[in-house]
Amino acid sequence: MGELEAGFAKLQGEDFEYYMQTYSIILGRNSKKSTVDVDLASMGGGMNISRQHARIYYDFGRKRFALEVLSKNGCYVEGVLYLRGTSHVKLDSQDLLQIGEKKFYFLLPTKQISIAKPTPPPPPLPTMVAPAPIALAAPGGGSSGKKRHEKPPPYTSAEEREVVAAIGSVLSDLCGPGEWMPIVELFNELHAPEHYSSICSPAKVWKVVEVKTEEDGARPWDGLLGLLRRYPEHFIINIKTKGRQSAEYVSLVSLVS
Image 1 (cartoon, rainbow, N blue to C red):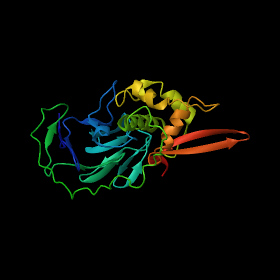
Image 2: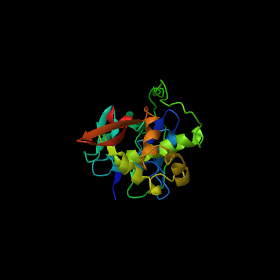
Image 3: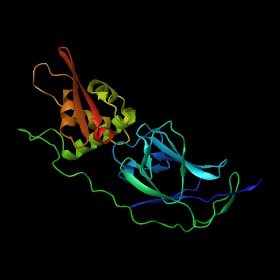
């Protein structure tokens, strides 16, 4: 067996660092059914982090590291958006990556390490050269978009925020950039708790979403529609009319802005 010129890589963000100890890692969001090597959702990656968002691996044929996009939401490498299905992206040391709202650097050791193929014992972690700190934009300001209620709702604001995050995760899995989802279909998808149970309990979701209304002709999904309208910083509602019929569609702000 020959030896390959390769070093274990490091991912470094403003508030985390991760050393690669295998030749392939998955980045994304943990769920009840599966876990990933780097859970970006738990680090504040935002609502459009898919369960399996991207893979970073060592390409033995080309003797370099590369990134494979697994999510419809795509990934940024050095400011360039790469979507699922595009060619795998070569990674160089100090490349700036962005997945969802999470920015971090891909770093290689200052000195190359000879690693025997296929599975050598892990070498001591090498010294990494870190670039300047990442300047992350502050969360969007302005009004929260919440409307005043004559009577307090039967849930706490903390519960509502958990549900909003769960719904955002479902949308990010089902919609790609520029795509819209009928509110009826989203309502039906929420009946599949495997989409969000790792983030929020199904009972809590329906406690918030199925808000009872006394209006005549209320539809089952009107509670969901009203919830999303209270968070215009996260969701955009679009109404399409054909003849006398109209239907509401929803998308994440991050996917259509």
